[in-house]
Length: 245
Image (cartoon, rainbow, N blue to C red; front, side):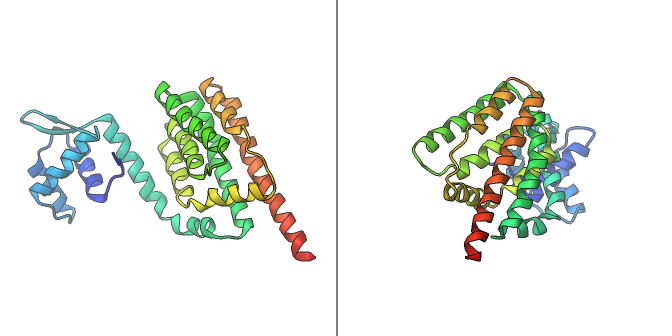
């Protein structure tokens, strides 16, 4: 189920969080109207039903809803994403650009984020996180062996690490950087043009995370990002040489 929250759902969670006691649907309608959000009792019921299914709120019999830890985490993440959206337009300009210098800037930004997410994931990951990342990695390796595109699954691998870091802000930052799929597809294209083989770096990063070795996980991720930078630079240099002929 899609866990992305819309503005009404975020406000409902905030109202429940701010309440010192379980809160009923009619009280939520009144609180939302005070925030200039008009919503019917039927609509608030649907919102609450979805939040319950997501495991974000729980109903106490005859009293109302209370916020669960997963709901508080989702609320924190949603607000972090909203705050980052202020800067998204500028970032999108870099990601959408086809100029290779801009892709280098994107890679440098990713490197700064992902060295930390890898380190935190090694220290904070659960068995469920490890199983999820390994499943993604196995699928990526299967596609690579068949010569298929790994662009989308590559993004999922890095998202899995960001999620395992347990840092909502860093996870949100990576989510924004990875929203434009052509970024990774361009890197894949560049690596194919310069005959750069598929590397085992993802497997090495995963093994360091599974071993709960933050130093090695960070080192492996940094090397992975350095290889991407080397590939982009190598292609750019060869492109410039051909232009000068």
